[in-house]
Length: 290
Image (cartoon, rainbow, N blue to C red):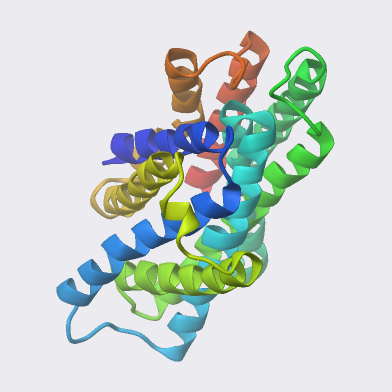
């Protein structure tokens, strides 16, 4: 399940890279959210009926997690993917492990150990290398544009994705099953973003009727199954096994990009590969130390 979760996260980002090559980020997000909710909500309703274990505290925590990770995180991540590619954005988003650790130390009084410091150093170093490589490649790669702005989007995604597990932890500590929590997250995300989408587009038909819809739906299926396998892996395997495997997603993105994407969409270089490896190792150390 951990391997599958990592592969599906990578597949999601590669599909989004293809979809945003002429497609629309807003369309991608609304379709993905619809697919997420269509799968998870009925499953939660059936498996946990009639006791869903929801309290007001849990609802607020999971709703906030949905806004942070599934709305703001996705907006920033997909914008980064569109501007600098999945192979650069995905490792940068892995810096979310650093954000989660800082918040856990601050909110829950968790201690900082040596592996935290080493992991943080590796993440910062890897992010710096990716930023440098991306800036150097800007002039020679037409698919890379507005590097400074794109890096802010990618790092913003790391912040929002890093906040998400802290809020999920608050919800789970109140006794809510994870599937129910995910349903609350996805419902909140879909309703809030659909409201914005309708106000800005005044239509729900267009995202499901474009030439890019198949890529949006594919990314939605990958993200839905990936989320379920992610939590399934954490529930059924030791964290020391599951987390390092799941954090290999950026490396899988690199492999998939080399195999399936044209160079005009993803320009893979050895410094980029090295930086991704450094970030993955750092993120794994930080997560395991927590």
